[in-house]
Length: 203
Image 1: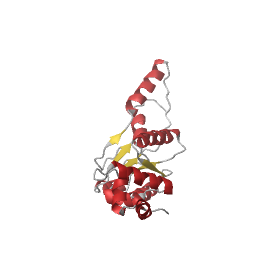
Image 2 (image 1 turned 180 degrees about the horizontal axis):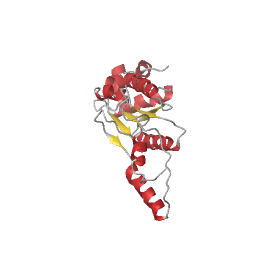
Image 3 (image 1 turned 90 degrees about the vertical axis):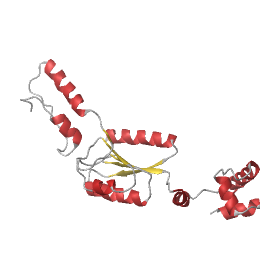
């Protein structure tokens, strides 16, 4: 594996000069930067992102936790997150919980150990016990398509109540009186919001 010392030896400068040149430091001349970068490319040097992250306090990655990646809803979210992250030169570490809160807790701990720069949590229920501990840390996180009653956390949700109301009103206008609703678990925010708008007499 090619190291900074190898590049320094080839160029004839110190390892610290190579490190600064690769980071585009204004303390290094453009001529030296060009020489260092050319040799680095020639030797096939790859930057150690883990070591760099420890120095800068940033991993260059965010964690995305979803309930079921085979569900089109979550796969669309993953695709959108990936597109934005790529534009911002971030990587995404994707974890699939299969809808299990204990698995989500395990993944969150793993992502924290990996020093991700932030977390996007889409997967579990309204009162996950691990969110309280997560809120006490310095790592930023956001909830997607879910709320948490016990933690004051930033969130992004669709207006499921308005959507359910429009659907029910449309069916009533068509003359339907017995309206059925097939929802998800009662501890999932979107299921509660939709279920609460069914009219009397609905199945």
